[in-house]
Amino acid sequence: MDVISEKLKLLPESPGVYIMLDEYKNVIYVGKARVLKNRVRQYFHNTAKPEKVMKMVENIRDFNYIITGSEIDALALENNLIKKYKPKYNILLKDDKTYPYIKADLREDFPDFYITRRIKKDGCRYFGPFMGGINCKDVLDILQLTFLVRLCRTKTTGKKRECLNYHICRCTAPCAGKVSKEDYALQVKKALNFLDGNYKEAEDLLKSKMFSAAENENFELALDYKNKLAMLSKLEAKRITSLNRYIDADIIAYATNNLYSAVNILVTRKGIMQGGTSFALDEAHMTDGEALTGFIVRYYSSHEIPSEIICEEFCEKELLQNYFKEKFGKTVEITLAKQGDKARLLKMAKENAADYLEKSVDKIKHKDDMTVNACKRLQQILGLERYPRRMECYDISNVSGVDKVGSMVVFIDGEADRSSYRRFRIKTVEGANDFASLQEVLTRRLEKLGTDEEEKFPKPDLIIIDGGKGQLFSVKEIFGKMGVYDVELISLAKREEEIFTLNSDESIKISHRDYSLKMLQRIRDEAHRFAITYFRNIHSKRNLQSVLTEIDGIGKARRAALLDKFGTLDKIISASMEELASVDGISRAQAGKIKQYLEENL
Image (spheres, rainbow, N blue to C red):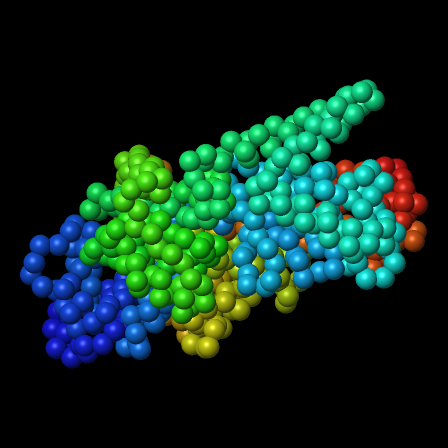
């Protein structure tokens, strides 16, 4: 604490971000402050603190800080640093999902409609998010069936042949010049009106088509229209009759038991309840207001920002409004609802947050045993010099030395960090030599240490090799050649689940009920899954290319188009004639050739 005491005396009276470090210099917490001097000192005063804060303070051995021009800049920098370091005591959106939207590209002469999970400032219109049992593809299907708009990304410049959708009356084929720009604009206007929540015209059209199909004894088509009408009823049922139909708002409520916290978000668009989701937070903020504010910043860094956020009165309203204005150029009304319909919606969100907190606490505690506590126990059992916060596991996959690949999976504090996974094509090894393949993969990985790329590929605390002593010592050889002596190295042999280390000739066996072994098995199995998936992917594509070269008239460009469309040989084999003919450059006659060849030879 001597270092900390001296640093506390030098803290400036400026806004900024502070970074808490543990004994191994790992970042364990990032926070923002209006006045750094006052805020950071609070952690080290001998005053009563919530249990969640005490847990963090016990692990602080040093801190750094960055002065910013304003509190808004501090809020933005805090968000960026949390994304970068993933500190164990910060708000992490562990149950986060990015929900789908329907995007209408109105920049085109003949706009198309498609599904996306990314909102961009690009002049397009976005509708959604779609959640709570509403399938985005079904909505698009209704859109095309009713208003005949195009769902493909085909360019509309130049003369093209109309596709199957035109012939079955599901599209007016603007790419083939079958409809004028003005007439297609009317179709798009009706489609946009539908996506805005006006379902009456679509309902009338679908009913008319259903009755017409039934009269013509086309019962299969009539049933399809009936199912679409049921989906419309499901969409309509989400409308909250007491709300103004033009309300676009996210309702956010917060619940805490002073150790764990939860947030619930309900999403309304044009008076329609799109759905809701809850998040379990494990954080060390000192006030509920800062916790809620921090969550909102993190959440909207990857989600659509609404025109209004209805939330609890303790959130930092002015700071958030200024933040959205300065960082995104968007005016967001932060409503602290106390009465009326909005207050009732907020109450609904609070009940959901409290229910999620109550029912997820045991799960979270159990999760700690499976993750952070398992890491601590592994350190103790194996006698590791440091806590294995970042663990990397490697595996090799091939068949008879063909299409050799390697995988690297990363676990942070015992949880998979999928954004850090990496795949390797083995370049220098002849035949099926797993030892040499491991050496190549680890050489390529460790070469990044001490370079500009180390920020993207941080030094691991522990490297795990799938295999026994042979694999372990082949990697140790690479460690020696590259002068890497401050990274722990072990291997895990699958047959007896033995752990081999560099410190003993004897293997270590951990009880199969021990969470630390279960964690090692998870990371080993994940490395194997990731490697075999990559191998199958490239092996399938190579086989696909070789099979397609045998078909007369299917050249390189058409093979590439088929590969882009279907990805695997199995999918091409199961594709219909119409699906094959829908690929760019493939005529119906060529689709027939492909189908015939595959049926006769595979």
